[in-house]
Structure formats: structure tokens, C-alpha cells
Image (cartoon, rainbow, N blue to C red; front, side):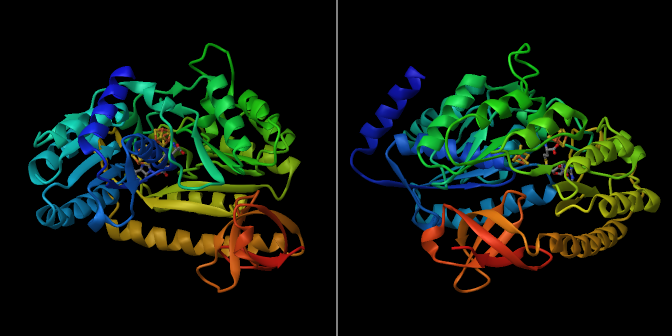
Amino acid sequence: MNDNNSVTKKICEILGNTSRKACVRSFGCQLNVSDGEKIKGLLSDMGCDFTDDETEADIIILNTCAVRESAEDRIFGILGSMKKLKELKPSLIIGVSGCMTAQSHAAEKIRKSYPHVSFVMGTSAISSLPKLLLDCIQGTKFASDISEYDDFSATVRQVRESSFKASVPIMFGCNNFCTYCIVPYVRGRERSRQPDDIINEVRELVQNGYKEIMLLGQNVNSYGSDLGGKMSFPQLLRELDAIDGDFIIRFMSSHPKDATTELIDAIFECGKVAKHLHLPLQSGSSSVLERMNRRYTAEKYLETVDCIRQRDPDFSLTTDIIVGFPNETDGEFRATLDIMKRVEYDNIYSFIYSKRSGTKAAEMEDMTSEEEKSCRMRELLAVQREISSEHYKRFIGRTMRVLVDDVSKKREGFLTGKSSEFIIVEFEGEPSLIGSFAQVKITEAMNWAVRGELIK
Ligand code: SAH
Ligand code: SF4
Ligand code: F3S
């Protein structure tokens, strides 16, 4: 840390009063976006300003995701197009951070095929950013640090994108090794942050006017399992709920195998905790779930859903689904559709299975054609569209408390926000309401959002 401070100081000296503009682009999940905010925190300490326009940047950092092949292809495409920028401005520093750098084949490809990239920084090496930049400024052609310095990054100040919504990582890594997933290989094992650090951070955010706190982890409900019984996730929710102030607590993602009754009790009993649960199903077929190493069956998943819906029949659930896992049969796919119809999710995030080298599923035989997988995906999306538009009708006539996010890009004069249930709500109103809670009476349901009228 001290060493880092002295490197940061040295960079400030070298840069003098010349202003440097940095462009940080994060891809993938919210944890990665949160890392991007830490990268910005370090850059800001080095005197950098920020821009979204790559052509005016002196430093560009691509904070990458490796969860699917399409995510990687996109990054390689962007990296390719940056060659021109570097030719136009030879002093430009281009860095690559995030999950792609933790895969040796991707890191090697970046080094070999994209010589205009100045440095590569691993997911646990954010703290080395000042040193990497100093090396680049002093003439190193290609600097790299993919070591594991670990949780130093938890203490890095974030330059947050929003002034009213804050994400707070509560744990890093994942122990679950779902057979399709690269995350445990690129993010390491589960490490929980100390409860006091999280509680103090949330208290400070709330004091600074933040209205939404999003707790982040690959599997938040196993929070604390490495803390020797000091605190569990439901206990943490209760501690945060007790903080004074008008704010909402969200969290993501929860693994169904760890969705205990203690967690469900905490959601219902804590007034500030959103009435919404993102519970990734992945597949509605128990045999596929077993091949995925998800460690729950379709029946067990439905028991959890029933337990929630017995307490509130309208409770909002969203999920992730993978279509076309190796050798998924038509019957197994239909089992997923059946659960979707039974649960009536408010929203689903669906992905066609993508082979990730190094994972167990990459070794599995897969006879299902890509064409068949695309066909299943289209069917699944059509089924969900139907479910959402029907299901959203339950909100008509109700008054929802909405955290106002922005002006609507679809309708002039309208604002958009999210309700406690994580439903997009549109209504007519003044932009001055952005960042505050509004009461909206719902009049209309669509398949992606609801519309209503502001209650003055
Ligand atoms: N930790 C979270 C999710 C992390 S990745 C959880 O367990 O819920 C986000 C989503 O990407 C996953 O839920 C899964 O649906 C999808 N995903 C992960 N690996 C994938 C792969 N190889 N192919 C397609 N989708 C994948
Ligand atoms: Fe990946 Fe499974 Fe861990 Fe989620 S729980 S990050 S899907 S291995
Ligand atoms: Fe992607 Fe890494 Fe998140 S692989 S989904 S950015 S943890």
C-alpha cells in the first residue's frame, strides 16, 4: 500500500500538471463493473480525468469478461480496432484487465496478436495498476502483472458511475465449479469481506445520499462461510437493514442450493431489503442440473419457490437459464419451459451454452446442433414474453415505490426507474426526480415494463 502510494506520487510528478484522460470500459457482470470503478479510483488518485470517448483518451483500459465466447470475441474485435488509435497517438497506453487476462491462452493471444496493448493486469492485481502505468510511461513495451495480491482491492476507493446507486462487493471468487462456468478459474476461491468493513461502507454510502445498495458476489448467500461463523448472509442483511436512512438493499446472485429459510425470513422481515430474488435456475431438468454440478434438483428448486410464494404469491423472481447444455435433449429443454411457466418469472436472462476451455463441460460430448440450440432459444424467449406480459398485469392498480433512474429513451417527457420488485416502471415526470423515490400508480402492463402515473 505504502509502496503503491509512492508509485502514485511518482506518476503525478512525471505527469506534472498535464492533464491525462482515461477511458475505462467494463464488460460482464456487476462485480467486474465494480472492479472498473476501483480502477477509476486509482486513476483518479494519479490525477486522471475520465472520458467515454476513446479518441481523446491518453489511457484506455478494457476490463474484460470471459464468461462466454461471444464476450471474448467482442473484446478481441475492440482491441483490433484500437490499433488505429495507437498509430494516431503513439503515446496512448492501452491496458487489458479483468477475467480474460486470467486465462493463459487469452493473455498469450493479447500479447502476441495485439502488440499495441501496453499492459495486462490480472483480476487480483488491480493494486498493481500504478506500477504498471509507471513502467509503460517509462518505456516498457509490454508490462504484465497477473499475480494474486488479493483483497487489497477491497480497500480501493471506487469512482462510482452513479450518485445514488452503489454496488458493494461483499465477497470475491466462487467455490461451486458449475461444469460450464469459467468464473472459479478466473476469480479464484470464495473470500468474504469482513462484516464491519461492509457495514461501515454501506453506512457511509447512505450518509452520502445513496438510495440503492447492491450487494455483490458470485454466490452472496454463501457469504461468511469462510469467516468461522462470525456472520452469515441473512445476518448481514439484518445488520444492514438496521442502518438509519431511506434506502433499498438488493443483492446478486443467490445460488438456489444456499437459499435457506433464514434467507427467506430475512428478505420478508427486513423492510429495506427489496422484494425480489434473482435465483438462477440454469435448467429445469434434474439430469441436466446434475451434469451442470448445480447441486439441487428441479424439485428442490420448486420447493424454495413455493416457500417464498406461500408467504407472498406475487413475490418477484428472476432467473438465468442456459439453453443447449451439452447433449440437452428436447425433453430436458421442455422441462425448463415447464418450470418457467410454473414459476412465472418477471424476467429471465437466457444464454446459449458456450464452451469454455478448461471447464468440465468442455470435455462433454455434444450432439445437439447449433441450429437446434438457436431454435430452442427463440422458443424460450417467446414463452417468456408471454409470461411477462401476463404476469406484469398483477401490478395494474397498485402503487409502486420507484427509485427513479433516468429519463426514458423510449418516450419523451417520461422517466424510468425500478420498483422494489426490480420491475422497470415508466411514468411522466420532471428529471429533477432522478435519484429519488417516487410513488407511481400502475395503469398499464407491457412485456418488458409497466407504466403508471406519478402520485403527487
Ligand atoms: N454466479 C452467478 C452467475 C455468474 S455468470 C450464479 O451462479 O448465478 C452469469 C450467468 O452466465 C450464469 O448464471 C449462467 O446462466 C451464464 N453462464 C455462465 N457460464 C456460461 C456458459 N459457459 N455458457 C452460457 N452461459 C453461461
Ligand atoms: Fe459460475 Fe456456478 Fe460459480 Fe455462478 S455459482 S459463478 S455459475 S461456478
Ligand atoms: Fe464475466 Fe468475470 Fe463476471 S467472467 S461474468 S466478468 S466474474
